[in-house]
Length: 306
Image (cartoon, rainbow, N blue to C red):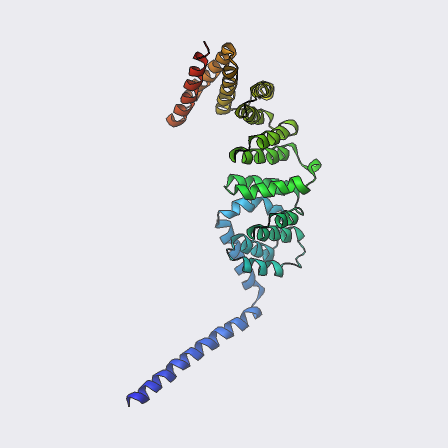
């Protein structure tokens, strides 16, 4: 009797398994026959999830590619994919998409994930320089610095720089300059800051960065020339208090290094006055302490000249 009961239980269990298999298979077969509304709702759900993902902020510059729903779905898969094989499958499905810009974007993403910088650049060269510059700028400031470098160098390798604006030119070269500054390549940083300074917009803040790069490289005369020339571009209607502080203090440091205590003191006093403005504007104590520390160090350097 026990054996017959066991056999009966096994048959009952097998029946349930078969029933579940039929349900699953039926569902898979029925999905393609459902109305387009369901498909669109699924796609819109994917897009909603994409917009909730922090990575969406990094790809917002690509919004002018006018992706349709299906392409946006593929794009979200590629951006979020941790499985390169899956990403390649998605890309293969998109080969016939009429939106070629979107296709080249995905191709570059996958190539970079696979470690092929050359293939990534070759794909991204099909995107407009302005899109690449804004995308690279955002990637850098969101922390993907090496990726940003590849994106921006794509513009240098393949882009038509005659068709970008002054602001785009500044963002292109100043972001690359910042990358090389942070990786310790001061000469490369100077090269790119110089290009941004000579041809781009925002000459006042870029003059500070270029002058500081020259100062770090020990080329103090050139640093002073750039910094003092940059003061001509300082707009009186622009509130730049902390940048102004660093700007004048950098000039004080340059003159102190050359042994010119009078000029160093002139710029030191301007910086000191700016700290008082920061206090009046309610700047936090931590920031004030950092500024005051820099001020004290340069005052000590000036006093040592005598």
